[in-house]
Length: 224
Image (cartoon, rainbow, N blue to C red; front, side):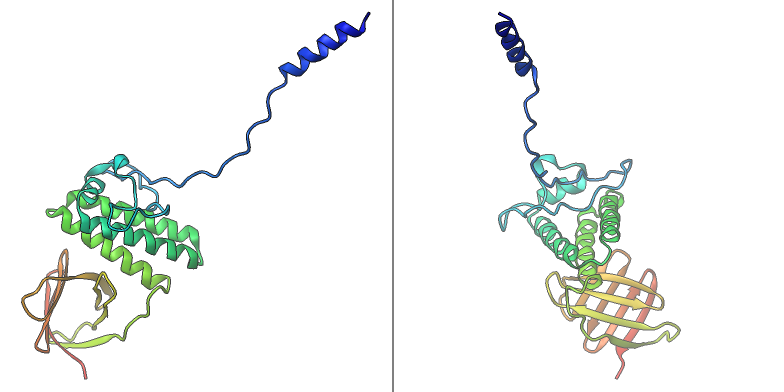
């Protein structure tokens, strides 16, 4: 007679046991929120699969935060630069000897881009930030063959002036004046080759280069 109560008790105990937890699934990468003037630095740009070619930036525009990300979402040229930066960042991750340093550097880049809300021309500032980010990642992680350095002789011979021109899109140059460097995107020009960024301009025409480097003006010719 004790068999039936024991059987019922064992069935009740079995029914109270928790169900096995489902196997965990891999978390999908998410796009970091854009930093604002009061936010902490955002995470590096998303490394999830880029959207279909020709469509939007690398992040989800429905979650865009701040004027900078909203600007990128509404501007096809900036969106293309964002996709290119995301792809370059993925390539850098595969080659980085110090992944933590790479992530920290990209957090700094995000903060710099989002600081463009302070600029008089926000779009130009954001565009320059993307070009600079792409070129710097390529150089630092060996993703591009570095062209020969062009040395210049200038009317003010107190500082070394040199340039490296990168023709892979987005075209840009790295200009060295003394101990300082600047990455300049190519700019529109009626003649000659012109590169410009905030506070810096390099314009070469008919064998002579005019340089404005944060208020320091130089006239230069390529050294032979």
